[in-house]
Picture (tube, rainbow, N blue to C red):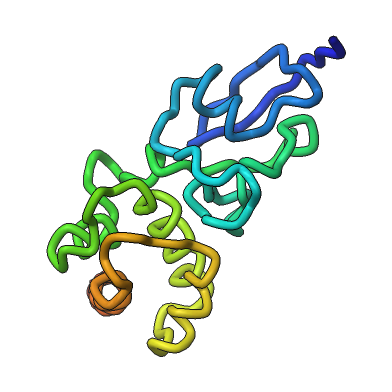
Length: 165
């Protein structure tokens, strides 16, 4: 078995790991780093449950190889909290009932974060397009769209207050 020593930067921390070259990022996150917030879904790149952000962009971790990600910043749902506080997306998801079984939620939240980081005022259509790679069997999507809109409004308000102060 071909094993490589690599350093991954995950949630702001560097991790030196011995990784079989065929092991996926999803497997490394869950099995080696014990970051189980990233979910096993279809393992075919179709459901989005395993979505993480790599350099701010959504990536399906079931299709990504860690050996190709050295030097890049990986963000999982565990790294989303800021200074011990939930991200506005996490709060909005809880408030709007956008979390049912919760299995798809980490991937959806991270895809939404990537969207709001590049577009702080998305239309509902832009939100739907950004989340189109994340399947949810429980909520029916309306609550998810409302949660992203609510979080976007709060994040704009927070930026406005910090710009004034």
